Each structure stands twice: as C-alpha cells, then as structure tokens.
Image: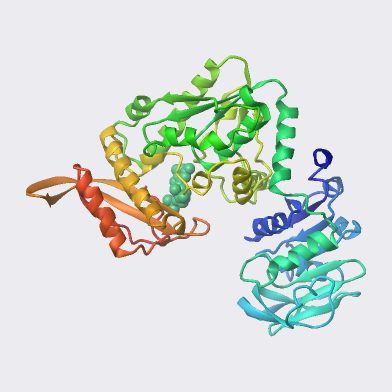
Length: 529
Ligand code: XMP
C-alpha cells in the first residue's frame, strides 16, 4: 500500500490573490490538473511563503493598476524562491514593473476574445501553439506591459497587447496578459497543466481516490476513538461529510436530521436511501441518523411573522436550539462535524484582512460552534464544491443527490410568501414534487440550475369541472445560472409548463391557478423572498 504513505499535499502551488474575481477559478483549474494549491492574500509574509514551500507560484489578476504607487505588489521573496512563477494579467504587469520593465495605462481597454500570435519558442506556450500559430484567448485589461524586464523574451502578442505573453526561461518566470483560467480561452487548461505539472514538476497526486484516502486517514488521526455528531441536511456538503465519516469512523458517527416542517416531500426518506451505496465495507450497514420531528416548534415560532429576514432568523436560531438539545442528549460526544468548504475558508480569511465580500449570514449551522463546547472536524475544508461532488460520487453517493439543485437553509419558509402555515407548506410540498418529478421525467432537471414552486397566498378564482374554486396561487420558478449571482429564467417548453400546470391544478384542490416566473436576476432574486 504505497499510496497510503504518499503525502498528496507535498507538491503544491501557492496562488497569491490580488483581488481578481477569477482567483478561485485559477485554483480550481490547477486542482483539475491533479495539483494541490492554496490561495493567500498577496501580502502574506515572507516567513509564511517559505513555510508553505510551494513548487511554483501563480499571481492572480486584480482590479487595481500598477501605474499607481499604492497598489499591491508581489512580495520580493517570491522571486528568490527559485521556483517557477506565473503572473496572470495584473500578476504579469506587477512582475514586469518590479523586475525593471515598464507598464503603461492603455487608452484602449481590451475586453473579450482576442487572437494571440506565437512570437517564438516558449517553455510555457509550445503546447498551446502545437496545432496553430494563433489561439483565441480571453482578455480583460486596461494597462499593458510596454517594456520587458531584462532576461525576458516575448512569446506571444495580440493586436492590443504587444507583450501578451513573456517569459524568462532561465529563471522560469512567466507572464500572460490573458486569462488561461476561464473556459473562453482556448487551450487555457493546457497552459495551466504545462505550468503546474511539467514546469513546476508536480506529479498529479491530487485525485478523488487519493483525496478520499487522505481524508479518511486524517479523520481517524484527528478524532481517534471519540464520538462525532453531524447535522445532516440532505445537501451535498453534509452528505459527503457523512459518507466520509461513516467510512472513516463507522459507528462513532451519529447524524442528526432536523425536520423543520419546511422540507421538500419525502426529504428524510430520500436522504436515508441515498446512503445505501456510500457505506464502505466493514463500516456500517446503514447510517446512524436520528430524525428529529421539530415541525411544531418551528411553525409555532413562525406564527404571525411575515417579514422574510425575520423568518430566516427564527428558522436559523430554532435550528441551533433543536440541534444543540439533541446533540447534548447524546452521551460522550466530543466532536461536531461540519461541511465547511474551501471557499468559506478563503472568505473568512479574507474578511480578517478586511478585503472580503460579506460572508453569507444564512449558513445553516452558523453559530453552532460558538454555542457548543464541541471540537470541530471539517473534512471538506480544503475542497472546492466541484471536488466535493467528485469525491461524493467516488464514495458511492448517487448522482441524483450530488447534482441536486441547491435548497436554501430556511427551506419552504422563504418560498411561502408572508406568514408560514403548516397547511400552506403541505400544499407547496405537493406542487413542488409534481414540478420536480416532471422536470426529471422530461430530462429537463439537469438543464436548469434551480427549479422550485412558490406559494402565493393570494386568492384567485378558478373553475375545475363544474365547480368554482376560490383558492391560492402557485408560481413555478426555474433558472439557468453559473454562479447564482446572475440568472436567466429558464425557457422551458410551453407544452411542458402546460402539463405541469394541469397536473398541479387537477391534483391539488387548494390551488386555483399556476403562473410561471419570467423574471431574471438581476433585478429579481432567484428566491421570491
Ligand atoms: P437569491 O434569492 O439571493 O438566491 O437570488 C441565490 C441562491 O441562494 C439561495 N438562497 C439561500 N440559501 N439560505 C440559504 O442557504 C438562504 O436564506 C437563502 N436565500 C437564498 C437560493 O436558493 C439560490 O440558490
């Protein structure tokens, strides 16, 4: 078992963040090449850099300009490490300026596709230009390098960036003005692979199988023979944590599944069933799940409350109360497992430096660790969401769970407009289940990013059969999005919407009318509250 001895973090790249919106994308692309990497703010100390001992460094882009004095600079110690360095966009400009070249503000901002032309043989770009002398890349810059530093050669140019790629083959410093990390750049993946694998000499040990093996060993070392409790929500992250812990420590794990009365239809049964394939040999036949029926407690607290943010706060706080109570009732538990993932870690680190966007306040279990005296085990802390999905599949969780649409922590609580009532939630659950079932049957589910029904407690007249109906309205919402920050309403076929609408009105007596939401984000949000 040679692999058990291999340290899959040993060969790693350091990514310095200068504030680009693409920094996490760079890291994900490096990881996709099988190479571990971590992101740090550009002003990380020289000691931390040498302690990290990277096999190579990537410098991100930035909204700033090096033509001004007080903007971010590359720590000088980076250039003395003796490892390859790749500067992307601002990273290239900062490297050029700091090593004796010149950068000018360009009157022409270059944004979008551009053709780069090979200028001469390149250690970095030869595989990019293997088939053609010109390649389409994605540009987004105002400034450009006007004079290269000594020792550098120009390896590619574009109409608006004469130094679109430069390199110092001796010191193995590279810079590209374009963005290899975005999919709009042809051969971007080949460039990053060439840098990470060949030029930095990393073997590619960062694979789902190795990550799982490594995580299992680490969990066993961390918790020993102690007992661990986990809040299982049915979402991808907590499910993958449960599968990993089950394989690592078997019966030492207890999962708590809180039914807040605002879950989708059959949620608890489906979560339980999903684990049948993810229980590693010799661990558990079945996941140890305590299902807590706290429906009345949540609904009582929500009675009379119609403000969306107030509802969110009540649902979050009640969850903590219930979970805390149940976990305390378990004997001898010392650890709380959480599905924290790497973007959460980066955001909280960045917020300490005062550079972050605000951390989401609506995280399901936020606040738990402060309240409870448990130690934390967070086996996904190093992973991006796409990596969590890959290891989930590797662990045997079904694709239907791994690629399930996101479901908000407050659940149906923010999909029932205004005051939440048990009877509304029952109706909404049925309507939502019909919509989702039909999407799956029509092979449309995976083509939209998120789809759900919304309960509108306004009365509308309908006639079903011979009977007049004066009941509430269901809205259907389906969106396509990459990052959930912007979204387009999904252009589902009319016949499909018609079929779903007929089913909902015919099968649910409490609904008189179905509407389809044709608002994109912005200005509308994805959820209705
Ligand atoms: P909006 O409505 O802000 O939604 O466009 C963007 C994404 O975030 C999800 N969302 C939430 N998730 N708690 C959550 O855990 C919340 O309070 C919450 N509000 C919105 C939403 O489902 C969508 O995926």
